[in-house]
Image (cartoon, rainbow, N blue to C red; front, side, top):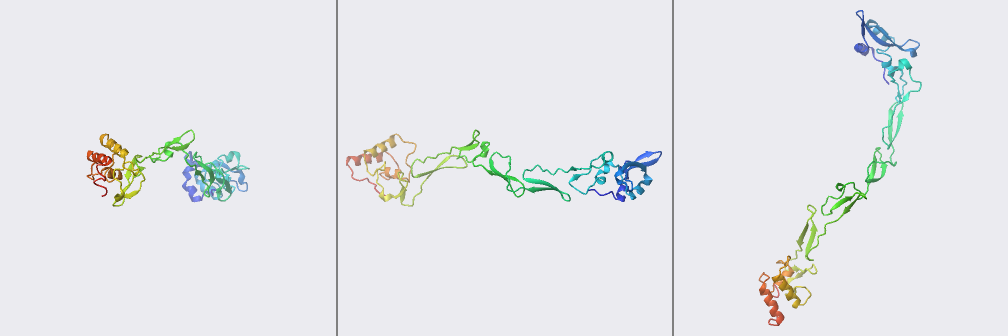
Length: 301
């Protein structure tokens, strides 16, 4: 605890020792400690001229109540010596203990008479980290309470996936994230459809086949163009009236997803190989079904 005030320091701080003026003479308050009876300390007022002499034989350069920390020092930092009223009440027989509680459930609080408060981590003990979306809370080696995150736990939509393709929201009744993913259906097996994570919009990409091959929309496989059966629009392996009906609908009532150049659907439909789906192709279809021609003018490329 606090040591007695050194003489030179006490003199320097004389102005703070409760100096008063009486008849032109400066008076100061000191704590007088009677020799042989130190427990009978009491505050007295003396002339400034006698100040140094009193300090020399053990008096303190302040009132006794201001010096309780020194007067009542029991050499134990775990007790409160500075009561502020020791002149009237005397030094406590059973001093009040220093409060070492750090408010942390993950530490064991104790006090060492020399070193003072000691807060020892309770590693492995159960605790509560105060977080709703964690579980199995335990104290770590540093005295902190840590919990394991609970999967899909949420308090708001911000706690859920921010990928727009997941369309995730927080169900406040269950505190769980609920996802309704964007479904991207490809128009055929020759198209790869995926949701773009930056926009949440479906992006459709055609399958690219090696040179000399085209993608079969019925199977999604790349096939050699030399093996293509021209006119087989429905890919059933037979050229028939069904294929003619499909072509008529395609020309007179164009669907939104017309076959595009470079695809197998376009290749088998463009039977004259001029790069356009039109009435010329329809005429060749009819001639072939009527037996006027045995093969299309363009069978392979």
